[in-house]
Image (tube, rainbow, N blue to C red; front, side, top):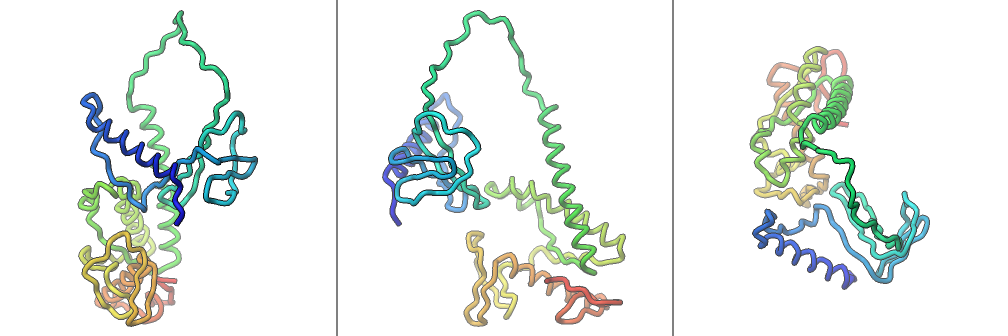
Length: 273
């Protein structure tokens, strides 16, 4: 790997600023945190850079094809490349336009007072909540319509919210609400929603041979078991295990569930594609 010296220097500068804020009694900044490799990443470039209508150039790399959404006016000073947690890449271009900043206004005629209330911000949050609820209803409808039984984990969301790194994402996902929607829609259609015990190690268990590992950090996204030649995405492996546990529960209730397909009453529908 070829590292760019300016990017490394900027990382040191950012770290220094973070510690200065932490030790400043007038600032309420927390102790600097180590940047995780799976979180948001960024690199700063200020030398040997250039940009065009649909490309940018930074040191050590070939020209990168991009979509520019603003006019490139002025002298290019720096380019900051960033990657989000979802794998999307962005470039922030800093230009010096040469325009002198206006002097502060001396005669003030119009003054506005702003109360930092929640009324308008709560309306924005309501729109986001409505969009999430709309997605959950459409997803649950598809799952119930295409299957005779849906198997889910019964997670202790309150305990999961104690994880400071994942609490925001878990809250945004609203798993509990999705399960409730699945439950009443399944009941209305005469279908089954099977809930698996929360202590079942679906992620740590091999869906092929049943071998269970002691530890499987969240950073490990693939399940590999050389002895039985299984290599799956972590979540897919867990979903297969959850499905198999659901089939066992359905059979204990006296329902006929074929081995290779889904719940069988008047027809056969797969639980897992």
